[in-house]
Each structure stands twice: as structure tokens, then as C-alpha cells.
Length: 342
Image 1 (tube, rainbow, N blue to C red):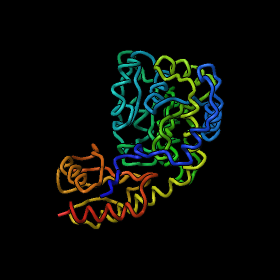
Image 2 (image 1 turned 90 degrees about the horizontal axis):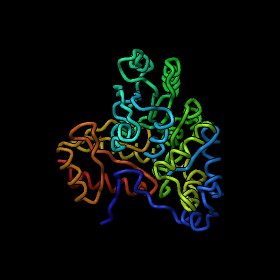
Image 3 (image 1 turned 30 degrees about the horizontal axis):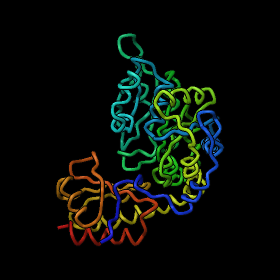
């Protein structure tokens, strides 16, 4: 029985064409600034996001944490939605690396309001200093929610009015761009820094980038070294990311369509609750009758791997990606009906 892995879009394997690009990559010592493939990637990312410069880094967490180090100082506070990746999935790095604390905002599937930003900003000398507002698009724990562009703009303006810097955790920003039908730069160009990831829906084996002004990225290079992220012949990784940018962005629409197909099918299965209208990108959050851990285990026994999600005790997350086909989705629905529901 074939295992169908819907735990995350991070499980993708490089395509044969991507592997060829990696094998043939032109490389040099990146610490000396001599890796031509990394340079091409960084120039291309900056161009796509409407910002001046970019820096290739190993992971999305490192990209986000470099941004925290750029914008914040010891004892500062960062405003972010309570379910944000920087709060839940980065091993306490805000406190552990920078001595920064989060000010969690209660959002709707990850999206909050400009009024919440204004109300949360600290203006006295007793509390920590509000320094940064961080947004996540698409929002992971929000089930792949896309930030509406005008709401995003309003939140940025509220942050600017309060003297805050703005960071975008755009790990899945290209999913948002494809779903909304607007360029990724529509969001990113409004920020001081944006992070994007190549190893999720874009299908590269590793790598992210942090993008911003030339001055900020020059400092980001120093912080990358401090965090152990400076690499040598990094073009072998950058080549996969560059290939992904050139060939795998528009095809994200296929993942979104399959997620909607999956949600519609699950909604017809007795004992499964899902709202297909909430599927905006490549994530489906469904509630099963059994407790979360039991549902995950029972699905695994049927050869369907899914992820637990914190949205409720009975919710699981199913993520479509490059390595999942329409036939796979139909097979998942068949196995759910046969082995889980009822």
C-alpha cells in the first residue's frame, strides 16, 4: 500500500530537473561573497519581493530570528498573533537569542486588526518597549489563511504610526500570492524585512531568504555568521531554490485546487467536520469524531499521514504539495471512508 504523506509541504522531494540543477550548480565560497548561484538567487528574490537586497540562509527559523536581531534589542517586545510561528515553533528563540518577549494578539485565523496594534503598543517606561510588529502570511496555525492585502496595509500603517518596524514571516508567501492573484511584492514591499522559504510548497530541499534594505541585509549577513548560518559552496542549495522560483511558483495553484477537492470530499464523510470555504491555499483542517491522537494513528494505519494541529483537540491538518496528485487525493478519501469514518 502506498503511503500518502499529507503532514506538511516540507516533505517534498526534489524533482529530477531540480536535482540536475543542483548537480550542475556553479559554486564558490559564499563567505567571501564568491558563490555566483547564491548571488543570482538573492538578486532574484529581492526583485520579486520589491526590496533592495536578500540573503540566503539555511532555514525559515533563522531568517525570522535574524529579523528579530535586526529590529529588537534586549528587553524589547514584538507584537505578533498568538499562534505565530515565531512564538510556537522556534524553540523560544525570541527570549533565548535576543532577550525579547512576545506580545500575543488574538487574531481570527492569524489575522488581526490595526486597532489591536495601536492598543497593544507600550508607551510608558515601566513595561518593555514595543519595537516590532510581525505578521505571518500565509498563517500556518490559521490553516493557510491569506492576509487580505488591505488589512495587511492597514496593520503596517498602524505599526509605522506607533514607530514600530515591520517584519513579514512569508514562509508561504508565494502560496498567498498565487491564491490572491497578486505579486508577492504587494505585501513584502510594505515591510522592513520579509522572510521566504523555498523548502515548503516550492519543493527545494532546503533554504530560506531574508529580504530588506541593503543596510539591513549587510547587518543580516553578520547575524547569520553569529548564528552559524554562513556556508561555503552554498550554490548547491541555492540552485534548488532558484529552480523552484523559476518553475514551481505558478503550479502552487494545483496544490490549492487539490486542497479544495480534499476538503469537499471530507465534508461528505460522516463523522468528519470541515468547512471547504476556509480552504484558501494548500491546507485543510478537519475535525474527526475521535480525539486527535487517535485519528492521526488510525489514518496512519490506512497509509495516510496527517499532522496534529492546535486548533482543537479533535482537529488534524492535511497539506497538499508537489508530491501529491489528484489520484492520491481520491485515494485518501477512499481510505478515510473505508477505515476511519464511523
